[in-house]
Image (tube, rainbow, N blue to C red; front, side, top):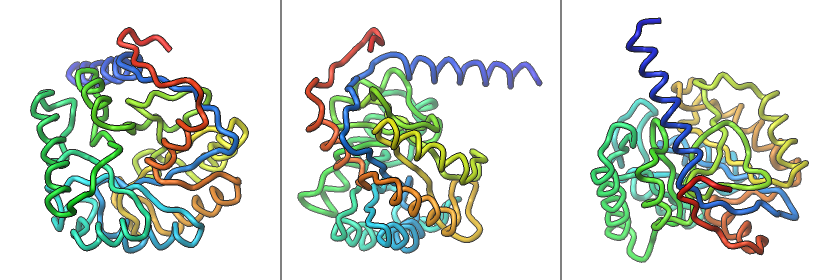
Length: 267
């Protein structure tokens, strides 16, 4: 492997480790019934037209993490949803979450520029949907960066990352675990089944994430058949199928310990 690739991989590993271990808002996960949330990043139109209909068949409503600067654009995950699509999703009881206005990568953006884009996205939402607000956030692209975690934690109830696992025993509200259902990860339904069972046994909070939902998906998306298999198994697991904001509220109402901010990374 070329030295530059080694440096890039090492730098990425350090960034992920620091983001995971420091600037945490830790809560205990004490649920009487496990929770599963479905999320779609970037809000491609297929996530609304196809993904939303699949989830409705199993009693699930999703969270769509949107970058309003991309509305209507053609991207690598397909055409992004319109304002009308967003409004219909809200009417159906789905949730809109923040993904920065410009779909910025925290790793390669100055913290002040990144946070300005977060603020711009919130302002844009108020303009197009007066009275609406973002309660939750998902990190675009590379994921969290230590310098922005505490700032986001002051604005949003919770922020979603990745990690391919569930939130059990405890959770960092500044960087919730999630499992991506996309071609990049190479996971199969067996992996999903084991993760859903693990979440059910420990009464945790499992968050699934993907982008486009089409028969031949991008490397960031999944097929309708795969999403349906996952939704069906999630439904059969006995978990509550809730958008991220509602899941957060359920978690906090069942948790007698308030979230605490740990700048040292203690849990």
